[in-house]
Image 1: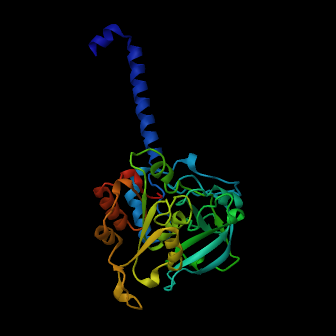
Image 2: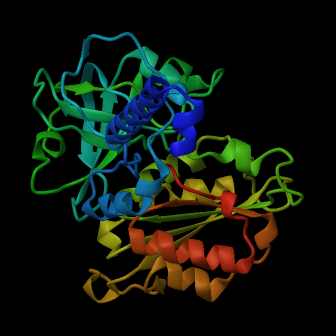
Image 3: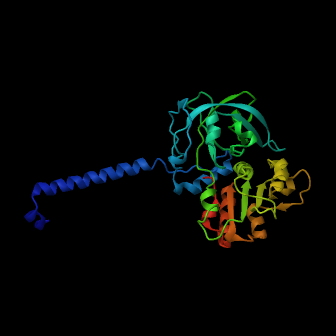
Length: 342
């Protein structure tokens, strides 16, 4: 300090300290602002089990705004939803169909008529929207991944303006699960990046090409998995036809709690081997002779035949997702090929 006074004017030293102090204040302020976006979009299903996965992903930040598709705003929300990506831009959606998705009536299949811009901006399985009571700025939205696949230009449904969702009944969501045809809701623009399969399963990112795809789902987490299977984007085919092999492990409590069981035959014909896993076979209405326990147990029993050439899609409860990922990585599957939509 004495040397500084001998060679540098005192007023210069004072200015240096002032600049240092201001720099500290700016750094603290920016850190506080950045703390708002601490949470990443998760599996986006109205399922309390799925919501538990959110806490395990808080270190990954919010979805990149550059990858979010927005359509013409009708009314921008004044509420702040911390960390779930950009503010929702609300438009009107109408219920065109609603029906039970499984015999236990624990899940509902809901089809909504949405703006054409939303359908066009839904391009990757695993993307989601926010949905809430219409014309209520204070209503709390739910986050729902699309169960229907993205529209592919040139297909018969290319002019469709509907999206299908799978909603698990809870104590506070009867406003949607008890809806009727013609009911109106507010829907956001399409959000999230979906399953990042193009950059991780395709191309030459790894020396080992993806020859096998494994799907893992529990409960209502089957919704975005169905979208991925039926998207036609994964080059899955029956053995011997030159496409990728695929297997789905799907866990529920009983056979009555299993949405899309009527689609298993369709998926099998598409080349996806379906492995239902029942955790409470004693509560099934009829005797269950298939796999029992949990999804991760079934995977451990079967193993992964070609791990370096395999990729995986995961959507479900935290315990399943963590256990399955550990098994996959330990077997040799590349970390970047274990895909989630959050």
